[in-house]
Each structure stands twice: as structure tokens, then as C-alpha cells.
Length: 85
Image (tube, rainbow, N blue to C red; front, side, top):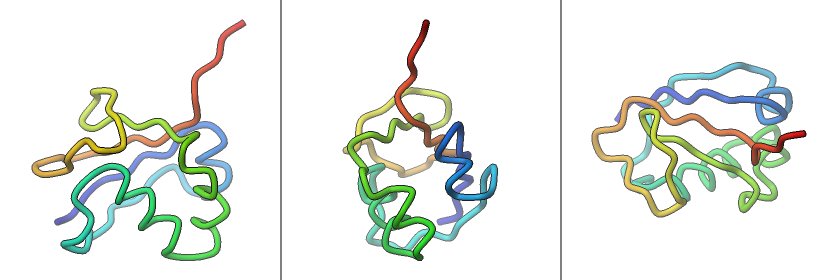
């Protein structure tokens, strides 16, 4: 399954790219598995997603939790918690 991933804020800075299109292995079926797969894929992902609990996600523009399924998704946005001032 091909999936567009958009990275925002320090996630984008650490990944070094604004986003990418990836071909997911069959074992990656939810947001949590996606983040774990990205972390295990290479050193850059390992550093970026070392604290996976800090990552927030939106699937096709809707905020989700780590257990949210990816079936039928076109895009996942990954970003740190939003803070305000």
C-alpha cells in the first residue's frame, strides 16, 4: 500500500524532508505500527521517532490515536504536540 507521509515542525527538521511517499509492508496496519516502522527503517527515523509517545498523527486530516487503522488512508501527517502561548 502506498501512503503519503507529511512531516511537520521538529519532526520535519529531524527527518530532513517535508514528506515522502512510502510503500508499506503488510504488517503496518495502524498509526503506531507506522511510527515504529519509520523508527526502525534507518538511523534518521530512529532518532526522530525515538520517543514515539510524543508524536501526534492525523490520518487524511483527522486527528487519530496510535491504534487508528491505515486501511484506505491516503495521507498521514506526523507532528509533535501543539503548544500555544
